[in-house]
Every structure is written in structure tokens, then in C-alpha cells.
Length: 258
Image (cartoon, rainbow, N blue to C red; front, side):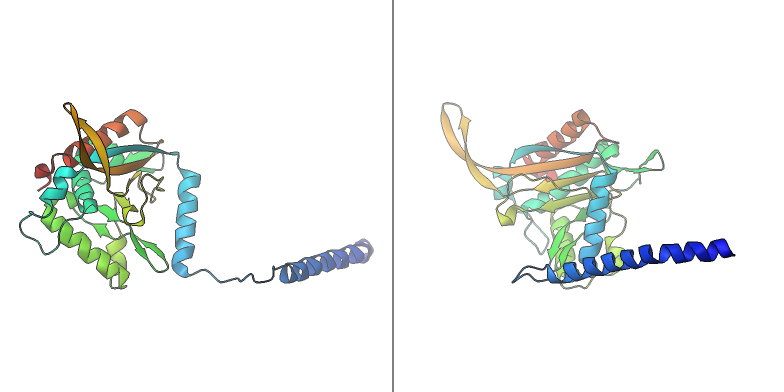
């Protein structure tokens, strides 16, 4: 017992010193804020986004492939699509093309789980929607069964309800692949981050007019940039490039999207 009391007595100055250092550190942190600087607590949604995006980059091996699609013919077709209440957007065309092509590339529609590659057997495409506090990703279930007009109605409804906070938690579950678009903000190519536990995400850029050679002359064509990020643990560059090429092929032959 004597030894224990002696050790406590000897440790007391060190303990007081550590407490003083900790107190000084807290005081410094409180007073070191620069003039004009503000601190705001993050929202619940932003905390979730921060955690998921950090974990995505930490736990996967991501790389991005970029290409472009000539969507001149789709620009004409989208005004003529019969049925549906919503005029199909370029993003709708991409979601439709992805839904048709994914069954040919099941690894891009899979997830890595417990040292196994799990194929869900369905094509459920998440659609990234910007909201005031961050980003929501409602899911188009069984997207491969929707035509272009129905796809436009579905994505338009999901996006509107997401922005108005009218979707339940189940609307965000079960996604197997995600499409995200920044074209309206003037972005061409970018490096989208995979939405875990998925293994791929496709970014859609802005439509831009570019000159293209036809015969001996030049014509102005409408070009759509695409950026595909994949998880290298599951997918390699070559098969991923084949998937992207098939998506481009459909976008450039838009009658096949209807």
C-alpha cells in the first residue's frame, strides 16, 4: 500500500502538468480563430456524405475513363419521342443506355463483399440529385425495363420529390450503379466518386458544339462528355472501356433507346 501511495504522490505533478497543457491547448484553439472566420456545424446529410465519400476512396481502388458521344441525332429525336409527360434529357438518354448495356457487363453492376464479387441480378440505377444541403441519390428500380419516355417521367419525378424532401428512405436503397451529371454547371469531364457499395459511377458533362470532318468538309456536331469511374478491385480498364464504348454506340444511335 505504501508503494501505491508513493507512486500517486510522485505522479501528481506530472498529471497537473498534462492538465495544464491540455487546458492551454483548448484556450489556444478557442482564441486562434482568424478575424472574420466563422464555424458552422455540419448537417446530418453532409456528415453522411463526408463519411461515405471518404470511405469510398479509402476502401476502393478507383480510376476514371473519359470519352465523348456524338448526340446530334438525339438532340433531334428527344423532341419527337412519343408518350410521356417529360421531354427526355441527355441524362435520361445516358441512364437508358446504361440500363441496356449493364447486363452485358455484370461486373460493373456488382459489389465487392467479404472477398467475393456479388451480382445483385437486377439493374437499379441511382440518379445523383443536388439539394440544398448536399447530394441525394434516389434509385430507378429495374431501369432496364423502362423505355426512354418512361425513364424521363421516372427520373423527373424522383428528382423533383428528392428536392422537395418527399421521398422515403426506401427510395434510396438498392442501387447497383449511379449516374451523376454536372453538365448544367458547364463541366465537361470530371472524376465522380463511387457510391459504395457499388463498383462504378458514370459522370455526364455539358453538351457542346464541336466541328467534325464529314467527307471533304466540316459540320458542327453536338458532343457529350462522359466520365466513368470504376473500382479496380472488381473491374479492369479494358472491359470497362468496352462498356463505355457500348454506351456511346447507343447514344449515337438514339432510335435504339426508345
